[in-house]
Image 1 (tube, chains in turn red, blue):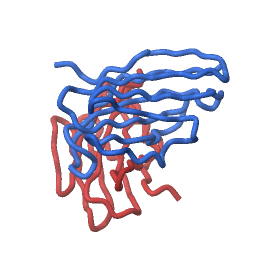
Image 2 (cartoon, rainbow over the protein chains, first blue to last red; image 1 turned 45 degrees about the vertical axis):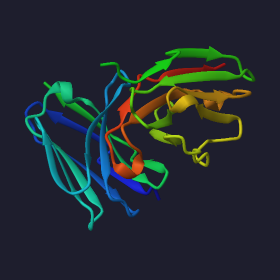
Image 3 (cartoon, chains in turn cyan, green; image 1 turned 90 degrees about the vertical axis):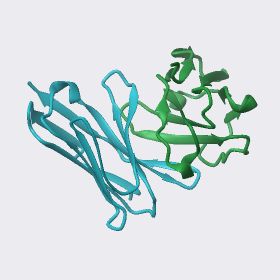
Image 4 (tube, chains in turn orange, red; image 1 turned 180 degrees about the vertical axis):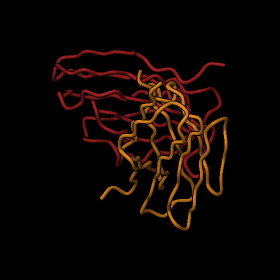
Length: 107
Length: 116
């Protein structure tokens, strides 16, 4: 069992829809990263959060450390949001990654 | 300002050859990370340098892999006697401080390694 699990694995949405991607982890961590990998392969860090909620533009990330769960939300989705979204948890001298959620937003 | 850079961007090599991949982190970043992403697979953590501390090498896939970071800046990842299963994109990232400080990581564009 992977220590960091994401759902769904694939997600297709129509432009304008509200998107939710979930990340659950079985290890004790104090913070979690959300990353975005573009179709060309480049990776961008979206959020690093240790509690509560963070917002950046149309992106919102929440985390509940006690419940070991984090969500990434995209409001008013757009085709340019199409990418793979990855959650990652630092653990000691290591990073544990979810398998990623491939999001496709259709116009 | 300059981001994380990696070289080469692409490397094609023959099985059994040694390869060296280079990463230039953002100036002032004390932490540097190497990751690997095989085709169609997720990210895999390889090794992490924090300042001048000796890195934890337990994430390296085999003893053919080694990494060093000179002067707390540039890092090289060396793969000896490459095998076809080493084919992947090798990504480097840096952050202002280490994992325990939960800093944002900045990723380089990666080196795509193909072992024939």
